[in-house]
Image (cartoon, rainbow, N blue to C red; front, side):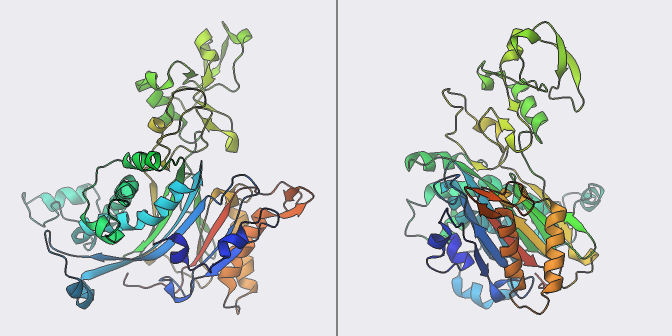
Length: 458
């Protein structure tokens, strides 16, 4: 299902949003499709000539997970009649492409099917508070339940594992889409045997002369809990009445420096003699050779002093700070999907071995909180967070919703307000915020998901 069809954008909306001079916002309210409330709202703003296309993609849908016995044959009529055999979840996702929009488009088309498949594989376990040692329910040892309890394994841990596996397998399906045009994507997702890596996407991108990758941020409401899985630098926060709850961690070369350095330590050939794995406060010069300077290696959170050798003058594996930090001088994120063809410019050094597609998953249990009418989940690509911090967004949300409580479009208007705030206003040839700071030049996509009237039995 194309992401625009899932989101219900009107025909022509993409074209209207494509104007670089005006950078018009495209808001959308999804009405009764939302499981959590009366409406789910999204808004997006295209970049200011940063790239040729809007590289952000979005998707949202209902996911019906069937509890079935292994080997049970498909029977569409039976599926319709026996709705009680389903566990229902609801899904929202944002994909921020780089090097072109293709990887983000593919991921937005497939990730929800991968999640559905992985949840169906463990449906018998997630329906129980304490998952069984054996998925079949068989008890080989009388103490099996005790071992599971001692490990503090709960149903939510199995859902988290399903999400992690779904990210890893997501783009496998895209390579088979062309040869299976006569089949529906659902059939492919349910029937195809998948390998536990996303290498197949490389074949698809190369075969169609496409390049690039994308970050992925996905939220799943399932069995009374909210799961937010993130691979990249998009972000999600819960804006509650009295607090703001971060629901994602960002993965950049800076935040994952130690993991990246450790890979370079274990497999030095990945650097091909062109880079140093060590981090220094600045790029070293010839005059630094023979001196002891501050440095960090993979096993260090603190700093030490290292006697500089000639090899240390090479370009650092991780260099720069904040939004300027780069992996191998090339990429600003360390997790995501795709990038199989990406190489360091003018070299044969591949970036892919350093990248991970596995998300960090955060869980929010609604049963432990008293959700109020104005409580919302806000998801956005980095175009928003580059210029607005969590507390600024939360303050805007609380104030806006309180001031517009009788407006049925208020959640949609909030999404638009956030996107336009980050976009700023054009002054001459620049986009500026109200405080005269530089605004975001990136694509900006925002989800505002009200939490109050959720479906309790999902």
